[in-house]
Structures are given as C-alpha cells and as structure tokens.
Length: 610
Image (cartoon, rainbow, N blue to C red; front, side, top):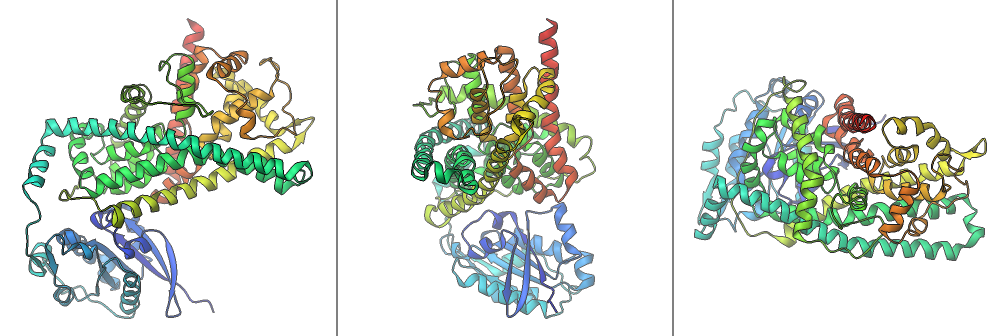
C-alpha cells in the first residue's frame, strides 16, 4: 500500500524570504518533495504574511515550518506567535518547527542568540541554519521528530519582544556615523523621492545598455549554431520530422527568446539583489508609498512595476514582498499592463519607423545600438509611463470594487544599510532567480516553436493552417484597424512575446506584394531567423510594412496593442500558482486584452470618422 506523504507548510517570513544566504531557505523556497527515513514529505511554501493562500493550507497540513531571520528575531517570533494561536492549529495540535535562517550573519553584526533558551521557552524544535550543507538535514530531522510528537499550545503564552530581548545579546554597534548619515538622507521625503526617480532611470539605462550589448553576441551565436546545423545535416536529414522540428521550430524560437530575456533578467536580477542586500529597496518602497497609496496600492508595488519592465515573471516573483492581500492581488492582476523586455523590440522598431521616438531603434535585426541617458529617459516617458498609469488606474478601480472586501495593510521592515555580499548572497540570488525564469520562458518558447512549426506543416484545401488562421482573423483585424497577419503574430506570440516581431516579418516576407489578396503561405517555407534577417535596415523594414498597407495609423494601433494585450503563457501560469484561482488568472489575462482591443477599436473608429 502506498504511503501517504506528510504535508509541510513552509511559512517564510518577509525578512527570511529575501535573505538568500541559507541553504535551508533554498530547499524550501519552491514546492518540493523528499524522502527521509522511508517517509515521503511534500513541501508547500508560503511567502510573506498574511496571505490568502495560507488559510487553504491549514486544514491539510501535518507540520508547520516557520522560517525567520536571525537578524530580525522579534518580527519572526511575532509571526510564530500568530500562527500557533490559530484555532485550526491549536485544536488539531499541529506540530511546528522554527527554522532561524542567516545565523552566519550574527557575528558580523554583533548579535548572539541563545538557541537552547529559545527552545526551552517555546517547547518546539528550533533549528539554527549557518549556510552549510548540513542545514537541510537538520531541518528534515527536526520535522521528522516533530510529526511524531503531540504539541499543546494552550499554555504557551509569550511576548515576542521580551523573548527576543532575553535570548538575544548585542555585544557591539555596527551602525557607524556613515551609515547613520546615509540613512538620514535617504529617509528625507524630498531627497528620498528624487533618489527614487533617479534610481529607477539609472537602473533602466544600465539594464538596457547591458541587455543590448549581450543580445548581439548571444543572437549571433545561436544564429551561427542554426546555420551550421542546417548546412551539416543537408536536405536528406532535414526531411526527417524530428530534425526538421529542431532546425525549423526549436532553434528559431529559442534564438528569439533567449538572447532577449537572458541578458535583461541577469542584469536586472543582479542589480535588484545588490540594492536589496544593501538595504536600499525597502527605503524606495517607503518613499513610494505616499505616491502609490492614493491609487489603491502600496510602496512595494513600485518594485513590482520596475521588475516588470524586464519580465513579467520577475514582477510576479517580486509581488511576494507585498504582505497585504488586497494590494498583492491587485499588483498580480495589473503587472502585465507594463511593457516588458519581450515587447520592446516591436515597440521601439515601430515607433522609430514612424518618428515617434526619433532616430532611436532596436529591431529584431541586431545592429550597433548606443543608448544614452536621455534616450532611456525619453523611452521611459513615451513607452513605460502609459503602462504605469494604466496599472495604477486599474489597481485603484479593483481596490474600490472587487478587492474591497479583502484586508489591507502596509507592513515594512527597514533593514540596516550594509555592504553587499556579492559571493555569498547577491550572485546566488540572481543566479537562482534567473535560472527559474529562463527555465519557464524556454519551455514556453519550445511550445510556441512546435505549434508554429505544426501550423506550417499541415495543409488543408491547398493552404497551410497558418494561412487559414490569417484569413480567419482578417475581419477582426480590419475592425481594429490592423490585419490578419498582425493578429496571428500576436496570438502565436502568446507563449513568448519575443517571437511576435520576427514572426510578423516572416509572414509578410512570405506573402506576395499585394496585401489585399495575399498568396498562400508555402508549406515548405522554413521558419528560421535567416529569413527574417534578409531585412538588413530599418528602411527596408519600413518599405516592407508600407507595401502591406502600413501607415502611421496602423503603427499607432500596433503600438497600443503591443502595450496592452494578453500576457505570455508563463506569466499566466505563475499568476495562477500565486493566487490559486482561475478567476483572478482570467482577470489578469482579460483586463489588458480588453483595454488593448477597446482602445484600438475606438481610435480606429475616430480616425475613420475624421
């Protein structure tokens, strides 16, 4: 008979959840299952507190693992006190284990914790973690011990502040005059707000500069791999369906997605981890709260929106910082209203061709691109501020309507300013987050490549399914002021937005010179990046688009639809994982889609009327 696994609810506090220096935290930060002493265990992590998802875990949990930080013992004990006072926990006598992370940071900060005294008072297992390989084994042993014990919390009544004071000893002051002066300047509303804006613009400029520099090298490397594989295999091997899919379906989509996402995510995750480790990000949230609070959000939402400019997955992960259920859910739903790095190539190419952003251009074709600070600022104003404004407006509307019954609070813990630890904290944090997001995006890109390749291989009534889809969407495209090719490219780009522009170029290149009566899309056409790279300049791209009926009206509508359309598939999966609700996942998909199609239909009607 198959043994039932033991369910562990790992409740990670805010301070411990973003301190990436402990091995135990990394093991329990994602849903994972393991076997210990012939018993199966299933870990269900819950980030931040309080969360609506935590209430659903109470009825089915066998052991509660509370992970707190050694540097913020009092806040962690408050979380533990709240958990063990719940009726569902006390009535069922659910065992609890306290894991104190980041214990290796005690000595540099002059902190000493008496773990034995803490365990005697709490009467539950207390496991200190020192960033070593044995930490995970110690936590597993404590969980195995706790599940076989019966705990009684009726007589357990302690004061978190008094218990933290009794078990903690500070033997030196590490907050010197320089740290106090910096903290005083950063806490000033005027200078703090200016630093907030300047920091965002600097991060945007630095991220885009590093992204475009690394993009060219990665793109040419993947393109060289694709061309080498095509030449070496020959026509005989390419006739095989698996090889044909790898060359014409898998590699093209990966060469569009990975070069764009990997540099942007690596640079942005590193910079955010660096600022977080230095204690700067919580202060940005503190100064952004008065600006975002009237819109139904909180200060931490500024970090979510900033990371969403690189990737929506990164913004969704960042929303775990928000502890208030109402603001967190509003942030998750409105995250995808902000243009991400996957949409920037199409936005900047179209706006450059019709003079909306001057001579600056970044198209699908790699070209020497130099980004100045003024260019980044102008791009932020033109392309990002409408997304920020729509996200805040939608958040305000949701907070006063659908999300009004949910509780709202703003909990912020300001850590001390300190020197970032690159090797032990910043680099591992950036590496783990980047690998996680790239893994999700790569899986979606493979799915998109297979679907596009399949549509191009199946022929019905003398035309491929791709061409049939274009003709089917032509009336809807005309209603929105677009065409069937544009809508097809957007729909097929749902798994990964990075393939929307190259797919649009490829379909236009396959058509005849008349956009009104397009020729059938050939079934044997190879969808790879070499075909799109036959367009070597922005002038040739503009000539191709004009040939198929483009003008500044259509360019404006394409920009609007690019900014507001259905989120990518990995983002929707991540939102469903965070909310555990199909209703809110559907809302996150429908709200930007309705805004984009509604604006396109309205503007198209006004342009035709005048």
